Length: 320
Image (cartoon, rainbow, N blue to C red; front, side, top):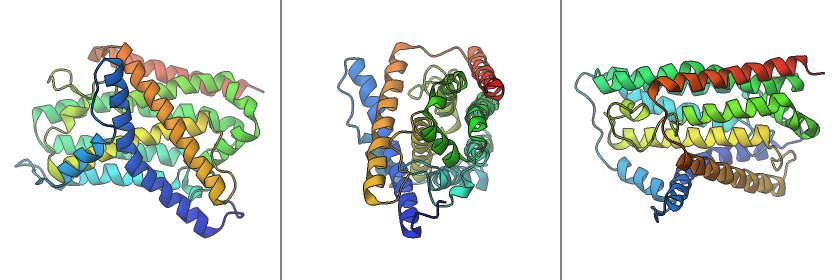
């Protein structure tokens, strides 16, 4: 944390980051649905519909499979909790968030992995065929997606000589030429593929499908209902918004607050909202143009992302 930032300002910006992610995640999902519907010639639901759906689910009764244990109930809490922790420590609005010293890329990647593993364990705990099938498929994809994510951000950390995300962003702002290097472009493609895979979007997975033989993520949460399902949906939308925020700040860092003061933080808020909205709309438009990959093709796509991330690291190491 920068010593020039008052403690109250740092705490307030971190709280603002958490609130922004909790509210902005569902709104981002609503925006992406709206864009898809418009491009397909349909009116579509309002952008705030996911918030209304969460409120409706939160009022319904929780249901738990007969043989499920505490793991089933804890999985949504872990999913949401890990995302909230990342939102508090990651540089989303400012390069000096509270507990920014813990905003290391390794910590953030493994917190994301912890949420994914918790949801898979919750699916396995139901002892149903669909839960096991979805968890198996999700872990197969995640086994390559998480290393690709780690390596793509590692490629950005090599020129900055630090794995600290605020330091990486600050270095990019200080040396804009880094943003046009080959390793950045390779890491950008790998990062985008990981976002698509981790959020269960096309062409890796179809979030709107209910066909048993094609479901990946939806198969893991079939047994959830009521407030538990609301937490899962909230956690999913927050993770999507978080990863797009990281994409925006790491590869297009302009606008993030580097100095204290309401004006700088306000500019950072406007900048991140605009960048995430544009990137989310672009991802939704891309989904309209592609079809879902066959399941055995998905590991090939993820392996491609991993290779691109490795090439980005190698390029960063050999670059002067």
